[in-house]
Amino acid sequence: MNDKILIIGTGAIGGFYGALLAKAGAEVSVVCRSDYPVVSAQGYRIISRDLGNWNFKPAQVVTRAADFQGAADYVILCSKLTADINRVELIRDAVSTHTVIVFIQNGVETEQEMRNAFPDNEVVSGLAFICCNRIEPGVINHLAYGKLTLGNLPQSVSDKTHHLAGLFNESGIVCTTMDDIVTGRWIKCVWNAPFNPLSVLSGGLATQDILRTQETFIRDIMQEVCLLAAACGHPLPDDIIDTNIENTYSMPPYKTSMLLDFEQGRPMETEAILGNSVRAAERESLACPNLQALYALMKLRELKIQSSSSLSDNAV
Amino acid sequence: MNDKILIIGTGAIGGFYGALLAKAGAEVSVVCRSDYPVVSAQGYRIISRDLGNWNFKPAQVVTRAADFQGAADYVILCSKLTADINRVELIRDAVSTHTVIVFIQNGVETEQEMRNAFPDNEVVSGLAFICCNRIEPGVINHLAYGKLTLGNLPQSVSDKTHHLAGLFNESGIVCTTMDDIVTGRWIKCVWNAPFNPLSVLSGGLATQDILRTQETFIRDIMQEVCLLAAACGHPLPDDIIDTNIENTYSMPPYKTSMLLDFEQGRPMETEAILGNSVRAAERESLACPNLQALYALMKLRELKIQSSSSLSDNAV
Image: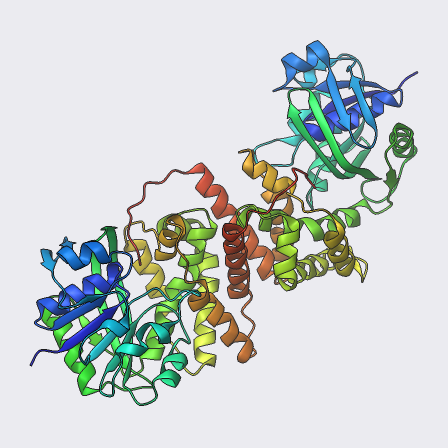
Protein backbone atom coordinates (compact mmCIF):
# COMPACT_ATOMS: atom_id res chain seq x y z
CA MET A 1 0.00 0.00 0.00
CA ASN A 2 1.26 3.42 -0.88
CA ASP A 3 2.32 5.82 1.82
CA LYS A 4 -0.32 8.46 2.53
CA ILE A 5 1.40 11.80 2.88
CA LEU A 6 -0.19 15.18 3.59
CA ILE A 7 1.82 18.31 2.82
CA ILE A 8 0.76 21.42 4.75
CA GLY A 9 2.06 24.82 3.71
CA THR A 10 2.40 24.41 -0.02
CA GLY A 11 4.45 27.34 -1.10
CA ALA A 12 7.46 26.59 -3.26
CA ILE A 13 9.13 24.19 -0.84
CA GLY A 14 6.04 22.19 0.11
CA GLY A 15 4.85 21.90 -3.47
CA PHE A 16 8.27 20.82 -4.70
CA TYR A 17 8.90 18.18 -2.05
CA GLY A 18 5.33 16.92 -2.38
CA ALA A 19 5.82 16.55 -6.12
CA LEU A 20 9.00 14.54 -5.52
CA LEU A 21 7.27 12.17 -3.11
CA ALA A 22 4.45 11.63 -5.61
CA LYS A 23 7.07 10.88 -8.27
CA ALA A 24 8.49 8.22 -5.91
CA GLY A 25 5.07 6.57 -5.70
CA ALA A 26 3.51 8.01 -2.54
CA GLU A 27 -0.11 9.12 -2.37
CA VAL A 28 0.43 12.82 -1.73
CA SER A 29 -2.30 15.27 -0.73
CA VAL A 30 -1.96 18.96 0.01
CA VAL A 31 -3.49 21.60 2.26
CA CYS A 32 -3.41 24.65 0.06
CA ARG A 33 -4.96 28.00 0.76
CA SER A 34 -4.06 30.90 -1.50
CA ASP A 35 -3.52 28.83 -4.66
CA TYR A 36 -6.48 26.48 -4.05
CA PRO A 37 -8.46 27.35 -7.21
CA VAL A 38 -5.57 26.65 -9.55
CA VAL A 39 -4.13 23.66 -7.69
CA SER A 40 -7.46 21.87 -7.20
CA ALA A 41 -8.18 22.23 -10.93
CA GLN A 42 -4.75 21.56 -12.46
CA GLY A 43 -2.33 20.49 -9.75
CA TYR A 44 1.24 21.80 -9.78
CA ARG A 45 3.65 22.39 -12.62
CA ILE A 46 7.27 21.81 -11.54
CA ILE A 47 10.08 23.36 -13.57
CA SER A 48 13.49 22.09 -12.49
CA ARG A 49 16.83 22.72 -14.13
CA ASP A 50 18.26 19.54 -12.57
CA LEU A 51 15.25 17.19 -12.51
CA GLY A 52 13.26 18.21 -15.58
CA ASN A 53 9.68 19.46 -15.77
CA TRP A 54 6.60 17.52 -14.68
CA ASN A 55 3.06 17.88 -13.39
CA PHE A 56 2.04 16.89 -9.89
CA LYS A 57 -1.64 16.15 -9.33
CA PRO A 58 -2.26 15.72 -5.58
CA ALA A 59 -4.55 12.91 -4.40
CA GLN A 60 -6.60 15.41 -2.37
CA VAL A 61 -6.46 19.20 -2.41
CA VAL A 62 -8.06 20.73 0.68
CA THR A 63 -7.98 24.14 2.31
CA ARG A 64 -7.52 22.94 5.90
CA ALA A 65 -6.23 19.87 7.68
CA ALA A 66 -9.71 18.95 9.01
CA ASP A 67 -10.94 18.34 5.45
CA PHE A 68 -8.32 15.67 4.72
CA GLN A 69 -9.95 12.24 4.30
CA GLY A 70 -8.26 9.20 5.80
CA ALA A 71 -5.27 8.65 8.07
CA ALA A 72 -1.95 10.19 7.06
CA ASP A 73 1.23 8.16 7.52
CA TYR A 74 3.22 11.36 7.37
CA VAL A 75 2.13 14.99 7.83
CA ILE A 76 4.85 17.26 6.48
CA LEU A 77 4.68 20.91 7.52
CA CYS A 78 6.56 23.16 5.06
CA SER A 79 5.22 26.61 5.90
CA LYS A 80 7.56 29.42 6.77
CA LEU A 81 8.05 29.66 10.52
CA THR A 82 6.82 33.20 11.09
CA ALA A 83 5.29 34.84 14.12
CA ASP A 84 1.82 34.95 12.58
CA ILE A 85 1.29 31.19 12.26
CA ASN A 86 0.29 28.59 14.80
CA ARG A 87 2.04 25.41 13.73
CA VAL A 88 0.15 23.10 16.03
CA GLU A 89 -3.27 24.33 14.90
CA LEU A 90 -2.28 24.05 11.25
CA ILE A 91 -1.68 20.31 11.49
CA ARG A 92 -3.61 19.01 14.52
CA ASP A 93 -6.76 17.86 12.71
CA ALA A 94 -4.78 15.66 10.30
CA VAL A 95 -2.70 13.93 12.96
CA SER A 96 -3.82 10.47 14.10
CA THR A 97 -2.18 7.90 16.35
CA HIS A 98 0.35 6.55 13.89
CA THR A 99 1.05 9.75 11.98
CA VAL A 100 4.69 10.80 11.78
CA ILE A 101 4.93 14.59 12.05
CA VAL A 102 7.68 16.16 9.98
CA PHE A 103 8.46 19.88 9.97
CA ILE A 104 10.79 21.26 7.30
CA GLN A 105 11.46 24.79 8.50
CA ASN A 106 14.26 27.19 9.37
CA GLY A 107 15.09 28.34 12.85
CA VAL A 108 16.48 27.10 16.14
CA GLU A 109 14.76 25.97 19.34
CA THR A 110 11.63 25.15 17.40
CA GLU A 111 11.34 21.56 18.64
CA GLN A 112 9.73 21.73 22.05
CA GLU A 113 6.43 23.23 20.87
CA MET A 114 5.84 20.28 18.55
CA ARG A 115 6.97 17.65 21.03
CA ASN A 116 4.72 19.10 23.72
CA ALA A 117 1.72 19.24 21.43
CA PHE A 118 2.12 15.68 20.10
CA PRO A 119 3.80 13.69 22.89
CA ASP A 120 2.65 10.31 21.50
CA ASN A 121 3.69 10.83 17.88
CA GLU A 122 7.04 10.51 16.20
CA VAL A 123 8.24 14.06 15.51
CA VAL A 124 10.84 14.56 12.79
CA SER A 125 12.77 17.76 12.25
CA GLY A 126 13.84 18.53 8.70
CA LEU A 127 16.17 21.01 7.05
CA ALA A 128 15.99 21.99 3.40
CA PHE A 129 18.94 23.36 1.44
CA ILE A 130 17.21 24.51 -1.67
CA CYS A 131 16.56 27.38 -4.03
CA CYS A 132 13.05 27.35 -5.41
CA ASN A 133 10.33 29.90 -6.08
CA ARG A 134 6.63 29.91 -6.70
CA ILE A 135 6.53 31.91 -9.92
CA GLU A 136 2.74 31.93 -10.28
CA PRO A 137 -0.16 30.04 -8.64
CA GLY A 138 0.57 26.33 -8.97
CA VAL A 139 3.89 26.84 -10.79
CA ILE A 140 7.15 26.17 -8.95
CA ASN A 141 10.61 26.87 -10.30
CA HIS A 142 13.37 24.75 -8.75
CA LEU A 143 16.58 26.66 -9.38
CA ALA A 144 19.30 24.77 -7.55
CA TYR A 145 20.21 22.39 -4.75
CA GLY A 146 17.44 20.49 -2.97
CA LYS A 147 19.16 18.48 -0.28
CA LEU A 148 17.10 17.49 2.75
CA THR A 149 18.27 16.36 6.18
CA LEU A 150 15.88 14.55 8.53
CA GLY A 151 16.14 13.34 12.10
CA ASN A 152 13.75 12.32 14.90
CA LEU A 153 13.45 14.33 18.09
CA PRO A 154 15.08 14.32 20.52
CA GLN A 155 17.99 12.35 18.98
CA SER A 156 17.47 9.33 16.74
CA VAL A 157 16.41 8.18 13.31
CA SER A 158 13.41 5.85 13.23
CA ASP A 159 12.54 3.24 10.62
CA LYS A 160 9.75 5.45 9.32
CA THR A 161 12.19 8.32 8.92
CA HIS A 162 14.61 6.10 7.00
CA HIS A 163 11.68 5.04 4.82
CA LEU A 164 10.73 8.67 4.08
CA ALA A 165 14.36 9.53 3.32
CA GLY A 166 14.38 6.58 0.92
CA LEU A 167 11.37 7.98 -0.96
CA PHE A 168 13.11 11.35 -1.35
CA ASN A 169 16.30 9.68 -2.56
CA GLU A 170 14.34 7.64 -5.13
CA SER A 171 12.83 10.86 -6.43
CA GLY A 172 16.19 12.28 -7.47
CA ILE A 173 17.30 14.54 -4.61
CA VAL A 174 19.69 13.77 -1.80
CA CYS A 175 18.10 13.16 1.59
CA THR A 176 20.34 12.35 4.52
CA THR A 177 19.46 11.51 8.11
CA MET A 178 21.13 12.77 11.24
CA ASP A 179 21.02 11.32 14.74
CA ASP A 180 21.30 14.78 16.27
CA ILE A 181 19.15 16.92 14.02
CA VAL A 182 19.09 19.73 16.59
CA THR A 183 22.81 20.19 15.96
CA GLY A 184 21.90 20.29 12.27
CA ARG A 185 19.55 23.19 12.96
CA TRP A 186 22.32 25.14 14.69
CA ILE A 187 24.64 24.40 11.77
CA LYS A 188 22.12 25.90 9.36
CA CYS A 189 21.70 28.88 11.69
CA VAL A 190 25.43 29.65 11.35
CA TRP A 191 24.68 30.77 7.79
CA ASN A 192 21.18 32.11 8.27
CA ALA A 193 21.89 34.31 11.31
CA PRO A 194 24.20 36.69 9.43
CA PHE A 195 23.10 36.51 5.81
CA ASN A 196 19.34 36.62 6.20
CA PRO A 197 19.09 39.81 8.29
CA LEU A 198 22.02 41.54 6.58
CA SER A 199 20.42 41.07 3.19
CA VAL A 200 17.30 42.87 4.45
CA LEU A 201 18.97 45.55 6.60
CA SER A 202 21.36 46.48 3.79
CA GLY A 203 18.36 47.23 1.64
CA GLY A 204 18.73 44.21 -0.62
CA LEU A 205 22.37 43.24 -1.11
CA ALA A 206 23.22 39.78 -2.41
CA THR A 207 25.37 37.43 -0.35
CA GLN A 208 28.55 38.09 -2.35
CA ASP A 209 28.51 41.85 -1.74
CA ILE A 210 27.82 41.36 1.96
CA LEU A 211 30.60 38.83 2.42
CA ARG A 212 33.15 40.63 0.25
CA THR A 213 32.89 43.85 2.24
CA GLN A 214 32.07 42.62 5.76
CA GLU A 215 33.71 39.23 6.23
CA THR A 216 34.93 40.06 9.74
CA PHE A 217 31.46 41.08 10.85
CA ILE A 218 29.99 37.91 9.31
CA ARG A 219 32.57 35.79 11.14
CA ASP A 220 31.80 37.58 14.43
CA ILE A 221 28.10 36.75 14.08
CA MET A 222 28.85 33.13 13.11
CA GLN A 223 31.14 32.82 16.13
CA GLU A 224 28.30 33.90 18.42
CA VAL A 225 26.06 31.19 16.93
CA CYS A 226 28.79 28.58 17.52
CA LEU A 227 29.26 29.64 21.14
CA LEU A 228 25.51 29.66 21.67
CA ALA A 229 25.02 26.21 20.11
CA ALA A 230 27.74 24.82 22.38
CA ALA A 231 26.12 26.48 25.41
CA CYS A 232 22.83 24.80 24.43
CA GLY A 233 24.55 21.39 24.35
CA HIS A 234 25.22 21.19 20.63
CA PRO A 235 28.90 21.95 19.94
CA LEU A 236 29.52 22.53 16.22
CA PRO A 237 32.51 21.37 14.14
CA ASP A 238 35.65 23.49 14.55
CA ASP A 239 35.89 24.36 10.86
CA ILE A 240 32.25 25.30 10.39
CA ILE A 241 32.86 29.04 10.03
CA ASP A 242 35.67 28.66 7.50
CA THR A 243 33.58 26.15 5.57
CA ASN A 244 30.57 28.48 5.47
CA ILE A 245 32.71 31.41 4.34
CA GLU A 246 34.38 29.39 1.58
CA ASN A 247 31.11 27.90 0.37
CA THR A 248 29.45 31.29 0.25
CA TYR A 249 32.30 32.76 -1.80
CA SER A 250 31.86 29.93 -4.30
CA MET A 251 28.07 30.25 -4.52
CA PRO A 252 26.53 32.54 -7.13
CA PRO A 253 25.29 35.86 -5.69
CA TYR A 254 22.10 35.10 -3.85
CA LYS A 255 19.07 36.80 -2.51
CA THR A 256 18.34 35.15 0.82
CA SER A 257 14.90 33.75 1.57
CA MET A 258 14.38 36.54 4.11
CA LEU A 259 15.14 39.15 1.46
CA LEU A 260 12.65 37.53 -0.92
CA ASP A 261 10.02 37.56 1.83
CA PHE A 262 10.82 41.19 2.57
CA GLU A 263 10.63 42.25 -1.08
CA GLN A 264 7.33 40.44 -1.55
CA GLY A 265 5.79 41.88 1.60
CA ARG A 266 5.55 38.49 3.34
CA PRO A 267 6.25 37.91 7.05
CA MET A 268 9.92 37.17 7.76
CA GLU A 269 11.49 34.41 9.90
CA THR A 270 12.95 36.93 12.33
CA GLU A 271 11.69 35.16 15.44
CA ALA A 272 12.62 31.62 14.35
CA ILE A 273 16.20 32.56 13.46
CA LEU A 274 17.12 35.57 15.64
CA GLY A 275 14.46 35.83 18.33
CA ASN A 276 14.87 32.21 19.41
CA SER A 277 18.67 32.59 19.35
CA VAL A 278 18.57 35.69 21.54
CA ARG A 279 16.18 34.06 24.00
CA ALA A 280 18.44 30.99 24.18
CA ALA A 281 21.43 33.26 24.85
CA GLU A 282 19.55 34.95 27.69
CA ARG A 283 18.56 31.60 29.17
CA GLU A 284 22.19 30.40 28.99
CA SER A 285 23.53 33.76 30.29
CA LEU A 286 25.70 34.12 27.20
CA ALA A 287 26.50 37.56 25.76
CA CYS A 288 25.58 37.66 22.05
CA PRO A 289 25.68 41.38 21.24
CA ASN A 290 25.71 40.91 17.47
CA LEU A 291 22.69 38.61 17.48
CA GLN A 292 20.93 41.00 19.85
CA ALA A 293 21.68 43.98 17.61
CA LEU A 294 20.47 42.17 14.49
CA TYR A 295 17.30 41.06 16.26
CA ALA A 296 16.59 44.59 17.51
CA LEU A 297 17.18 46.03 14.05
CA MET A 298 14.95 43.46 12.36
CA LYS A 299 12.19 44.22 14.86
CA LEU A 300 12.55 47.91 14.00
CA ARG A 301 12.45 47.09 10.29
CA GLU A 302 9.27 45.07 10.82
CA LEU A 303 7.76 47.86 12.90
CA LYS A 304 8.40 50.27 10.04
CA ILE A 305 6.64 47.93 7.63
CA GLN A 306 3.63 47.69 9.94
CA SER A 307 3.39 51.32 10.83
CA SER A 308 2.92 54.34 8.72
CA SER A 309 3.63 56.71 11.54
CA SER A 310 3.28 60.34 10.59
CA LEU A 311 6.55 62.19 10.89
CA SER A 312 7.56 65.79 10.98
CA ASP A 313 10.47 66.68 8.74
CA ASN A 314 12.79 67.74 11.51
CA ALA A 315 16.52 67.17 11.70
CA VAL A 316 18.79 66.77 14.70
CA MET B 1 34.65 97.90 12.17
CA ASN B 2 32.28 95.04 11.55
CA ASP B 3 33.47 91.47 11.82
CA LYS B 4 34.10 89.89 8.44
CA ILE B 5 32.68 86.39 8.46
CA LEU B 6 32.73 83.84 5.66
CA ILE B 7 30.30 80.91 5.86
CA ILE B 8 31.30 77.85 3.86
CA GLY B 9 28.78 75.10 3.28
CA THR B 10 25.54 77.00 3.09
CA GLY B 11 22.89 74.38 3.35
CA ALA B 12 20.22 74.96 5.96
CA ILE B 13 22.56 75.26 8.92
CA GLY B 14 25.15 77.51 7.31
CA GLY B 15 22.52 79.79 5.80
CA PHE B 16 20.63 80.05 9.06
CA TYR B 17 23.62 80.82 11.28
CA GLY B 18 25.00 83.23 8.67
CA ALA B 19 21.68 85.05 8.62
CA LEU B 20 21.79 85.33 12.43
CA LEU B 21 25.30 86.80 12.41
CA ALA B 22 24.27 89.32 9.75
CA LYS B 23 21.29 90.25 11.94
CA ALA B 24 23.76 90.89 14.78
CA GLY B 25 25.71 93.34 12.61
CA ALA B 26 28.51 91.24 11.13
CA GLU B 27 29.53 91.51 7.48
CA VAL B 28 28.64 87.98 6.38
CA SER B 29 29.65 86.45 3.04
CA VAL B 30 28.93 82.96 1.80
CA VAL B 31 30.53 80.30 -0.36
CA CYS B 32 27.55 78.77 -2.06
CA ARG B 33 27.57 76.24 -4.87
CA SER B 34 24.29 74.56 -5.77
CA ASP B 35 22.06 77.52 -4.87
CA TYR B 36 24.41 80.18 -6.27
CA PRO B 37 22.03 81.57 -8.95
CA VAL B 38 19.22 82.24 -6.48
CA VAL B 39 21.36 83.34 -3.54
CA SER B 40 23.54 85.73 -5.57
CA ALA B 41 20.42 87.36 -6.99
CA GLN B 42 18.11 87.45 -3.95
CA GLY B 43 20.01 86.26 -0.88
CA TYR B 44 18.29 83.98 1.63
CA ARG B 45 14.76 83.95 2.97
CA ILE B 46 14.66 82.71 6.58
CA ILE B 47 11.39 81.39 7.97
CA SER B 48 11.56 80.78 11.71
CA ARG B 49 8.75 79.87 14.05
CA ASP B 50 10.69 81.28 17.01
CA LEU B 51 12.59 84.21 15.49
CA GLY B 52 10.25 85.45 12.77
CA ASN B 53 10.93 85.73 9.05
CA TRP B 54 13.59 87.87 7.43
CA ASN B 55 15.83 88.21 4.38
CA PHE B 56 19.59 87.81 4.56
CA LYS B 57 21.60 89.42 1.77
CA PRO B 58 25.24 88.29 2.05
CA ALA B 59 28.02 90.84 1.52
CA GLN B 60 29.65 88.55 -1.04
CA VAL B 61 28.28 85.40 -2.65
CA VAL B 62 31.03 83.30 -4.23
CA THR B 63 31.27 79.70 -5.44
CA ARG B 64 34.65 78.90 -3.89
CA ALA B 65 36.81 80.18 -1.05
CA ALA B 66 39.49 81.52 -3.45
CA ASP B 67 37.02 84.08 -4.83
CA PHE B 68 36.37 85.71 -1.46
CA GLN B 69 37.72 89.30 -1.40
CA GLY B 70 39.45 90.55 1.73
CA ALA B 71 40.59 88.93 4.97
CA ALA B 72 38.05 86.97 6.99
CA ASP B 73 38.03 87.35 10.77
CA TYR B 74 36.12 84.08 11.00
CA VAL B 75 35.69 81.29 8.50
CA ILE B 76 32.79 79.09 9.60
CA LEU B 77 32.52 75.68 7.96
CA CYS B 78 28.98 74.31 8.15
CA SER B 79 29.00 71.52 5.56
CA LYS B 80 27.99 68.00 6.48
CA LEU B 81 31.03 65.95 7.44
CA THR B 82 30.78 63.19 4.84
CA ALA B 83 33.43 61.00 3.26
CA ASP B 84 33.24 62.83 -0.07
CA ILE B 85 34.38 66.26 1.12
CA ASN B 86 37.85 67.58 1.86
CA ARG B 87 37.36 70.06 4.68
CA VAL B 88 40.82 71.57 4.47
CA GLU B 89 40.60 72.23 0.73
CA LEU B 90 37.15 73.77 1.12
CA ILE B 91 38.40 76.53 3.38
CA ARG B 92 42.16 76.90 2.79
CA ASP B 93 42.07 79.75 0.27
CA ALA B 94 40.01 81.96 2.59
CA VAL B 95 42.21 81.47 5.64
CA SER B 96 44.75 84.19 6.43
CA THR B 97 47.03 84.73 9.42
CA HIS B 98 44.45 86.09 11.82
CA THR B 99 41.45 84.08 10.65
CA VAL B 100 39.67 82.06 13.30
CA ILE B 101 38.53 78.73 11.84
CA VAL B 102 35.23 77.44 13.15
CA PHE B 103 33.70 74.13 12.16
CA ILE B 104 30.11 73.39 13.10
CA GLN B 105 29.73 69.72 12.29
CA ASN B 106 28.71 66.39 13.78
CA GLY B 107 31.10 63.57 14.58
CA VAL B 108 33.90 62.63 16.93
CA GLU B 109 37.67 62.68 16.50
CA THR B 110 37.34 65.32 13.80
CA GLU B 111 39.74 67.81 15.38
CA GLN B 112 43.23 66.69 14.47
CA GLU B 113 42.84 67.11 10.72
CA MET B 114 42.01 70.81 11.15
CA ARG B 115 44.66 71.47 13.75
CA ASN B 116 47.32 69.83 11.59
CA ALA B 117 46.31 71.78 8.50
CA PHE B 118 46.20 75.16 10.25
CA PRO B 119 48.72 74.97 13.09
CA ASP B 120 49.04 78.76 13.42
CA ASN B 121 45.34 79.62 13.47
CA GLU B 122 42.81 79.49 16.24
CA VAL B 123 40.60 76.47 15.55
CA VAL B 124 37.14 76.41 17.13
CA SER B 125 34.91 73.37 17.29
CA GLY B 126 31.18 73.97 17.25
CA LEU B 127 28.10 71.88 17.88
CA ALA B 128 24.63 72.80 16.65
CA PHE B 129 21.43 71.55 18.26
CA ILE B 130 18.91 72.62 15.69
CA CYS B 131 16.11 71.54 13.40
CA CYS B 132 16.14 73.39 10.13
CA ASN B 133 15.64 72.52 6.48
CA ARG B 134 16.36 74.08 3.13
CA ILE B 135 12.90 73.93 1.59
CA GLU B 136 13.91 75.38 -1.78
CA PRO B 137 16.97 77.19 -3.17
CA GLY B 138 17.70 80.12 -0.88
CA VAL B 139 14.80 79.41 1.47
CA ILE B 140 15.50 77.99 4.93
CA ASN B 141 12.86 76.83 7.39
CA HIS B 142 13.98 76.94 11.03
CA LEU B 143 11.67 74.56 12.86
CA ALA B 144 12.97 74.35 16.40
CA TYR B 145 15.90 74.71 18.76
CA GLY B 146 19.05 76.42 17.50
CA LYS B 147 21.51 76.27 20.38
CA LEU B 148 25.21 76.40 19.56
CA THR B 149 28.18 75.40 21.69
CA LEU B 150 31.69 76.63 20.83
CA GLY B 151 35.15 75.93 22.21
CA ASN B 152 38.75 76.30 21.07
CA LEU B 153 40.98 73.30 20.44
CA PRO B 154 42.51 71.67 22.27
CA GLN B 155 40.82 72.97 25.44
CA SER B 156 40.08 76.64 25.99
CA VAL B 157 37.81 79.51 25.02
CA SER B 158 39.58 82.49 23.44
CA ASP B 159 38.48 86.13 23.42
CA LYS B 160 37.57 85.83 19.75
CA THR B 161 35.40 82.82 20.51
CA HIS B 162 33.66 84.71 23.31
CA HIS B 163 33.10 87.54 20.86
CA LEU B 164 31.57 85.22 18.25
CA ALA B 165 29.35 83.63 20.89
CA GLY B 166 28.25 87.14 21.85
CA LEU B 167 27.15 87.86 18.27
CA PHE B 168 25.08 84.68 18.19
CA ASN B 169 23.48 85.50 21.53
CA GLU B 170 22.61 89.02 20.32
CA SER B 171 20.90 87.47 17.29
CA GLY B 172 18.35 85.63 19.40
CA ILE B 173 19.69 82.10 19.83
CA VAL B 174 21.58 80.65 22.76
CA CYS B 175 25.31 80.16 22.22
CA THR B 176 27.36 78.74 25.05
CA THR B 177 31.10 78.11 25.28
CA MET B 178 32.83 75.08 26.70
CA ASP B 179 36.43 74.71 27.85
CA ASP B 180 36.49 71.08 26.78
CA ILE B 181 34.55 71.07 23.53
CA VAL B 182 35.86 67.60 22.65
CA THR B 183 33.86 66.25 25.57
CA GLY B 184 30.92 68.14 24.10
CA ARG B 185 31.35 66.24 20.83
CA TRP B 186 31.24 62.91 22.66
CA ILE B 187 28.13 64.05 24.51
CA LYS B 188 26.41 64.77 21.22
CA CYS B 189 27.57 61.41 19.90
CA VAL B 190 25.72 59.64 22.75
CA TRP B 191 22.49 60.59 20.98
CA ASN B 192 23.66 60.46 17.38
CA ALA B 193 25.35 57.04 17.53
CA PRO B 194 22.09 55.14 18.14
CA PHE B 195 19.37 57.31 16.65
CA ASN B 196 20.98 58.32 13.36
CA PRO B 197 21.81 54.83 12.06
CA LEU B 198 18.71 53.18 13.55
CA SER B 199 16.46 55.65 11.77
CA VAL B 200 18.05 54.63 8.45
CA LEU B 201 18.44 50.90 9.07
CA SER B 202 14.84 50.59 10.26
CA GLY B 203 13.74 51.97 6.91
CA GLY B 204 12.65 55.36 8.23
CA LEU B 205 11.30 55.14 11.76
CA ALA B 206 11.04 58.29 13.84
CA THR B 207 12.87 58.57 17.15
CA GLN B 208 9.79 57.85 19.27
CA ASP B 209 9.08 54.49 17.64
CA ILE B 210 12.72 53.45 17.91
CA LEU B 211 13.00 54.38 21.56
CA ARG B 212 9.60 53.03 22.60
CA THR B 213 10.35 49.54 21.25
CA GLN B 214 14.14 49.23 21.69
CA GLU B 215 15.10 51.27 24.75
CA THR B 216 17.48 48.57 26.06
CA PHE B 217 19.32 48.40 22.74
CA ILE B 218 19.57 52.22 22.63
CA ARG B 219 20.97 52.26 26.16
CA ASP B 220 23.52 49.56 25.26
CA ILE B 221 24.78 51.65 22.33
CA MET B 222 24.90 54.81 24.46
CA GLN B 223 26.84 52.94 27.12
CA GLU B 224 29.48 51.97 24.56
CA VAL B 225 29.86 55.63 23.55
CA CYS B 226 30.30 56.59 27.22
CA LEU B 227 32.96 53.93 27.80
CA LEU B 228 34.71 54.94 24.60
CA ALA B 229 34.69 58.64 25.46
CA ALA B 230 36.20 57.84 28.85
CA ALA B 231 38.87 55.64 27.22
CA CYS B 232 39.71 58.60 24.95
CA GLY B 233 40.19 60.85 27.99
CA HIS B 234 36.75 62.46 28.02
CA PRO B 235 34.62 60.91 30.75
CA LEU B 236 30.96 61.91 30.39
CA PRO B 237 28.50 62.79 33.16
CA ASP B 238 27.04 59.79 35.01
CA ASP B 239 23.45 60.69 34.20
CA ILE B 240 23.97 61.33 30.50
CA ILE B 241 22.18 58.22 29.27
CA ASP B 242 19.12 58.74 31.48
CA THR B 243 19.01 62.39 30.45
CA ASN B 244 19.18 61.53 26.76
CA ILE B 245 16.45 58.89 27.10
CA GLU B 246 14.15 61.25 29.01
CA ASN B 247 14.73 64.13 26.62
CA THR B 248 14.05 61.95 23.60
CA TYR B 249 10.77 60.72 25.09
CA SER B 250 9.70 64.32 25.55
CA MET B 251 10.70 65.46 22.05
CA PRO B 252 8.18 65.27 19.23
CA PRO B 253 8.77 62.28 16.86
CA TYR B 254 11.76 63.16 14.74
CA LYS B 255 13.39 62.17 11.55
CA THR B 256 17.12 62.29 12.23
CA SER B 257 19.45 64.27 9.99
CA MET B 258 20.91 61.01 8.71
CA LEU B 259 17.45 59.79 7.73
CA LEU B 260 16.77 63.05 5.88
CA ASP B 261 20.09 62.67 4.04
CA PHE B 262 19.22 59.08 3.22
CA GLU B 263 15.75 59.93 1.94
CA GLN B 264 17.08 62.76 -0.19
CA GLY B 265 19.89 60.67 -1.66
CA ARG B 266 22.64 62.74 -0.01
CA PRO B 267 25.84 61.31 1.50
CA MET B 268 25.44 60.35 5.16
CA GLU B 269 27.69 61.12 8.15
CA THR B 270 28.47 57.44 8.72
CA GLU B 271 32.23 57.92 8.95
CA ALA B 272 32.12 61.00 11.17
CA ILE B 273 29.80 59.43 13.72
CA LEU B 274 30.37 55.66 13.53
CA GLY B 275 33.57 55.10 11.55
CA ASN B 276 35.57 57.49 13.73
CA SER B 277 34.08 55.91 16.87
CA VAL B 278 34.98 52.38 15.78
CA ARG B 279 38.52 53.43 14.84
CA ALA B 280 38.92 55.11 18.23
CA ALA B 281 37.71 51.91 19.94
CA GLU B 282 40.27 49.86 18.02
CA ARG B 283 43.03 52.30 18.94
CA GLU B 284 42.02 52.13 22.61
CA SER B 285 41.55 48.31 22.48
CA LEU B 286 37.98 48.68 23.68
CA ALA B 287 35.27 46.23 22.58
CA CYS B 288 32.33 48.13 21.10
CA PRO B 289 30.31 45.41 19.35
CA ASN B 290 27.18 47.50 18.93
CA LEU B 291 29.01 50.42 17.33
CA GLN B 292 30.88 47.97 15.11
CA ALA B 293 27.66 46.28 14.05
CA LEU B 294 25.97 49.60 13.27
CA TYR B 295 29.00 50.79 11.31
CA ALA B 296 29.14 47.54 9.29
CA LEU B 297 25.42 47.73 8.58
CA MET B 298 25.58 51.37 7.50
CA LYS B 299 28.48 50.55 5.16
CA LEU B 300 26.35 47.76 3.65
CA ARG B 301 23.42 50.16 3.30
CA GLU B 302 25.68 52.66 1.53
CA LEU B 303 27.07 49.92 -0.71
CA LYS B 304 23.53 49.02 -1.73
CA ILE B 305 22.85 52.65 -2.61
CA GLN B 306 25.98 52.81 -4.76
CA SER B 307 25.63 49.47 -6.45
CA SER B 308 22.94 48.03 -8.60
CA SER B 309 24.37 44.56 -8.50
CA SER B 310 22.47 42.07 -10.61
CA LEU B 311 20.85 39.39 -8.53
CA SER B 312 19.36 36.06 -9.28
CA ASP B 313 16.09 35.34 -7.53
CA ASN B 314 17.35 32.43 -5.51
CA ALA B 315 16.42 31.56 -1.97
CA VAL B 316 18.38 29.77 0.71
